[in-house]
Image (cartoon, rainbow, N blue to C red):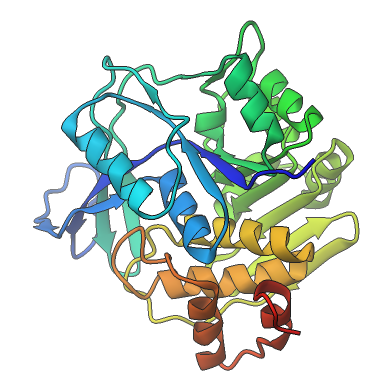
Length: 323
């Protein structure tokens, strides 16, 4: 059976930007300078990166059928992303995200849009199970519905059908039941803040060992400019970061995770994938907008070469005809 690309399950939104001199404390008042709005959304950002790199990409969300929703889906289609799996629920509000830029960091505020659910039927569940990879966030995996199954049971069912389930855990904003859901996934990305939350005071090595023993095959802890650490059955591998001139970190994590998935699918080598993802993520920080990480494989390799990196092994693994 030839598996068909990656399906990204989650949000697409209009990102509304504001710049502040510094993030205020509670009770403070500050001026915010409006910036141009950009099309964003954590999972849609990742899907856009994957499609631009050359990966077969589909997208599933539930949203209203209003003007903004149609605009967002049209933009995804124009990037080569198939939105045929998307669902409609007119009880939901428009999908927007407020992003405040402060120095080299940002604060993201996401208004709730209502009781968003991803209702699967037999046909759509079969489509997910036939994909090569399913990519989502913890909040979006919680929204999966299929008959009487829990989200964790749905994820295990998708994996049992042969698809890889990939989780961007990000800062690990956990709710009851999430640990079972996390443990059901195959590849998990989490940043250093999220890993500390996930560990909840337990020894980091014990946390990693438990996840790998439970069926996870790759746990990647991202470290911002310091790169990442890849944990798998071979042990742990630290991959150094790339120095960047940071303009906006919005979407850099989404870019890293999606670029890793693309490169891992192409190469089967987690170290190759991590090196490529580090370059893609760093490149994404040097422009404004959550989609600044969108680019081709050559774009990322050129960026890495300019940063003094040897890209011969990456090119051989990721570019057709290069050996």
